[in-house]
Image (cartoon, rainbow, N blue to C red):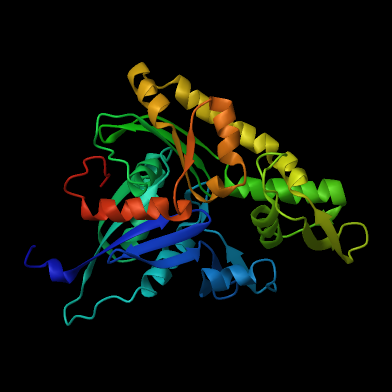
Length: 340
């Protein structure tokens, strides 16, 4: 332990399109939606996280709700910086007579550009970080579910987040084959909103579409343990009157079919480009699903039918990437794949 270590605080950030998680002292201390509410006139931040999400779709013209990240990368630099600052303030940091410095490890999509990497690092530095490391999401997910990424063994991880689906074959501390597509949880939500509009002539907001996805979302039209039908409330597009309709999981499965086919296609493409020796390993180890999208009913079985390989959903898949980022935070000296 270095003499000045007491002046450094370490945090790991899973900066996601839908949710941001922060790990401090081995605990998840922040788990909030990646949303910011801003006063349009003064450009001041009114709320972040859960409070900002509650305002989404319900605010007057003086308040704007922004999601600073789109497709896994920062789309609004200023809002992202303010959001990160706000989340860091939520942490119960140690009090010291000396100013403490922040060391951060932040996860990023594998398909990110150099410009987008720089945007993440700049946002972190402006939010107070003195030392910033980046880790690719599939690598963080693999570490988070207990895979020894430094071993000469091929493992395929599929992380289905809010903005992107990250598919990677990992071996010897590196990503051998990767595929990143902008089809994930947000796309599922848009599919549901479009379906409600075309099938029932009813407009639903993001929050209601999210509830539909959670309650009756499915990747297959036949489930062994189907969820009960779900009442949906929205605005009738013909007369503007609030309306209720009842939807089934089979309907939602059909509305999500095209998006899931794109994910299946990306998985098959990644498998096709995997070296033979690593393919042999994957045949034995199977595929690992992480991220919130992996919790969609029947998705693991559908991918297993498509690939003819065993598919495993990680325990607590929503936090797998954050856990892996937290472990990487402790091993910045040993993990050469971290980006600085």
